[in-house]
Length: 456
Image (cartoon, rainbow, N blue to C red; front, side, top):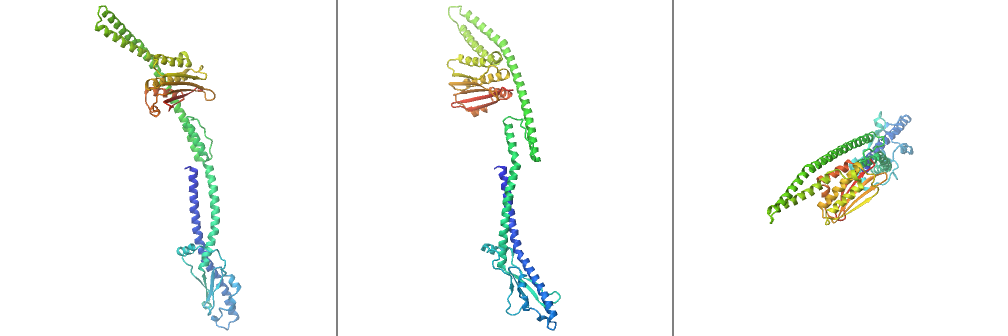
């Protein structure tokens, strides 16, 4: 899952939790606001009755104080204006058959669902009545008792919640949208960083990243740039070491070729001469003796060893591209394999592009790759046809493509994981030249392809 989607999902979860908390708070606040309205109504009515009490006391001082209130004047429209909706107020001691004076509650709030009306009182409790004295200095003046209407309180709470939820939903949607855009904008450089890492994985180590405003992303960008520089330096050092090893190995191959030619070849020639002398001396008689037969067998074995020696010297000595050029050396390589035996598979040579100016390490690497791939296809496979294709791709990506494909079957994955000296050698040569090597299954066999850059 993408990081942007993860962060947006977490943000939506946080918004949902905040919205739930806001709903709970709104429910509690709306439900308890009725208690505040009840207390305020009782206080306002008590203050109004206190003023009425002292007014009546001054006008009718001859009457007993306990008979001053209630008087008909307190149940007026002005008094009702002091009572909050959903609250009923009564005067105590009350006159017989006197009903409480209630605030207007018709149409107060929306009718709540039954589950809300049942749950809220269970968790938040019931409302208590509020008692206020008419006059703190005259206890005989009576008291004002304010009682909230439970149904009206729940309706008010439900309407308040609906209003709060509407605003909260709009705010949550706006916050989620704006925060998602901000997160997407903040993480946009991550795609640039990933693209740079992918280019580095393909070998393009010098990948400069733009300067990011975020300190953390800027640190990541600098780390990626430093990593690319170090990888390029390490790759160059490894390529230089590989080239040096190849040069040392080529020197050893030439030295070994000289030793084999000078020592081993001369000794084989001497053995062959001695065998011929023994065979000639043994055949002077009329009948052929066993010594002559043994001498001929020694001669045959010596001839075989000398042929093997010539083949080894041909592989160990300096490659032909140094002498003939790449195109001529490849033609010579294919002709030498064709001339060894008529029973060998058909070898097709396909040369494409201008190969005349290719020389040096690139030509040597291409020749060695073709030589090793042909050897493996001829010696280790049951191929009937082998195609050697050398193609020069001109343009900005000036490179040489060497592809050897056969129809002898074989497991490409097993061959690619092989640690044989021949395959390891050509892989090292191609890597040292800055190229790439791939071993893939072909239609009826294997396809070995190497790409050698020529721009360097």
